[in-house]
Length: 244
Image 1 (cartoon, rainbow, N blue to C red):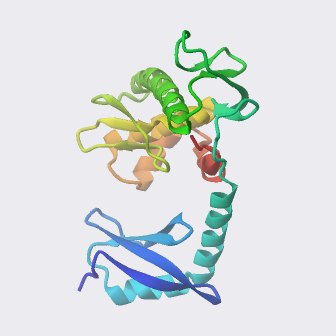
Image 2: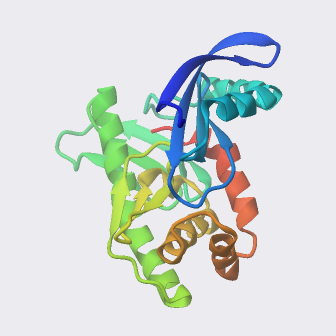
């Protein structure tokens, strides 16, 4: 009997921890169970649709040491996340590099964030929400232009055509490909290096040909991005820094 959508409370390592286990049952041709730590208190378990509750629980029990380590690392990343105050002297990531931010407010000048190639300038009243909105708007606009161009570029190389590009505010999901082959990307990608951005574009385009993460899918990615594994690691290790 397939288990319910989710259950809570579990153990992580030698200590009892309040970990929420969210269960995702897939009808796709998935044969294995996998785990993903999505927060310091939540783990997502992906399994084939007919997996029993006993098998899920058994798998989780076998992975207790891994879960404990992964949860601890996620907690450390969360604590290290920079919470911008949008004050002069802070830095913002753009295309993999940190750039100094200067903040002022001139009501007669254009409100918003701008970049001169070496540093950021923010003209905005001293209200944290408005400052953040200006930053999000700037990154979103740059993402729309940059990613649309990269999708067009790699579409020609891969012989695949996307049915549009959408920019989202997702925090941890860098991109996605819908059933109708519409691609979505987080504006936060603009904080990553260009080669990492290109990997995500290729990754999502490859889903037009393969709606899964099978060996055929990864072979398709490998045809265009030979070192995609290093880009995956880079995102995993640095995504906690991209706070806006």
